[in-house]
Image 1 (tube, helix red, strand yellow):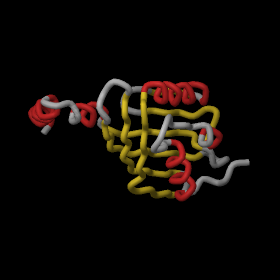
Image 2 (cartoon, helix red, strand yellow; image 1 turned 60 degrees about the horizontal axis):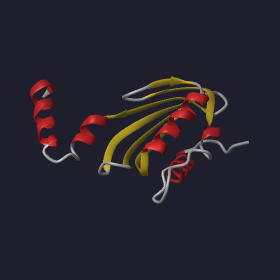
Image 3 (cartoon, one colour; image 1 turned 60 degrees about the vertical axis):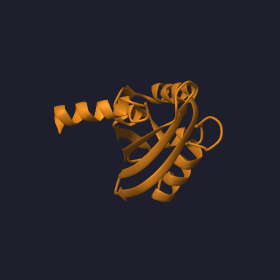
Image 4 (cartoon, rainbow, N blue to C red; image 1 turned 120 degrees about the horizontal axis):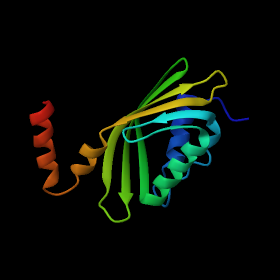
Length: 145
């Protein structure tokens, strides 16, 4: 049986998942997810541990290196919020830092039944492309600011 998820355990698990050398590895954290996990982020929505495992494998395949820094973490009953900075190094592109947050919802068994990740994928990536970041910010400010 897995340990009960706490803030300290989440920080420990996430730091092992996104290591500083080599490929990320989710094998130690996947047992903490419910088999019917509902995952959603800025680009995808999936249901089930099989599909969730597949997206972790795709991210591992695409990236050269991945680092996660948990800035803040709070837990209230069955809800865990994480604020994070993720640095991803792609095989053919420069490293990008994504700033985001995750909401984890635990089920009655203490497993992660829902994960919703919030981040500005394009803004954070575009900021690392010389000349394009300023144009993107100008566009966003004009359209939404």
